[in-house]
Image (spheres, rainbow, N blue to C red):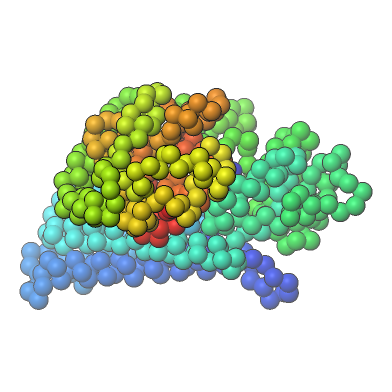
Length: 494
């Protein structure tokens, strides 16, 4: 679990400004929840009306003991109640994470089941076609509407246009800096660090800063510091001086102030499904399940990979032929480039790509080594002179990687996974980085949807290791969906 995941994200709190007229965080939060409620109601009304006309058209509905002028509004109200009952308007799930979508879908499916059972027992004769269309359209519409609202929220947060919590971080210097880095890595989560408090022993006699974060005092002045910077959240990270008693008293002091207290344990990069909290003797113990590298889910993942890759290869045959012809006409050399990469368990295999460089590209590498624009073990330059004219187009839209579908079909790779490394890179891996080899490499992955070549080596490795530890079929489908957007934007493709 990352620090940003442990902090329960709230939606659209303000970035307070000076002056009494500035709206409070709670006011902005309630306003966003109301907007989501209205949006949901509009979607459901349209879904019910659409279901009615799709089923009956202009005909008079028959066979129902209750007129549809009552059934329709009652269904909308019951749907909204179901959403409320499953806490789909809880500020802690709005705007960040997959839980919002899961709750919306679960509320809709449960209501559909309840309506079907009630209709059967009461024998009211409401059209199953009407109900089926309404629930299908409504559920999909709710998820799409929530997604659109979230993107608008994330856009506002990324532009610094407010809508983020003002956070005071308290803890040891190293842990404060780590939490600040984690929260700033994902600004759309809605946490803006505006100050810090550190232990007495670390305070200098003059005001100081941790990076660009001002240090406002010690643990004795937390409430005063929060008031000074108009913070609405106090985030506690690790420190030897923050004992359980002291932390409990801090919670008491924050009661009635409107300031939320959140905890960021040192446990990071572990996804929610692997974490279970169990209270023992008043202590919330966090149980962390081990990563899963084999078993039924792995078999299902392999089946899905091969099925989708075969389907995609079959559908893309005309495009593959056009690309092959363009490469052949543009430059001399083979159409397919085969390069040795390292896969699961350190096994080497040949990865297939459309050739995008001149045939003597490897021989020219030594001459270009000094121009490397990336850190770490990879070699990348934005305007590589070895890339052909057709190759630039293929790389821009990631079309050069289409032959890797054959690697997936043969079992060398997965559709989603870490970037397949070169043997020369693996030879320089340390113990942590080598964990990337515990799963099959992928055509796409978290690195692909997070910036590709624009990422630093450290960030790329972090994303790969996160995937290795927390992969799931649902996450794979999400990454595949986001890959389409990443390819269209062409960010980091060179």
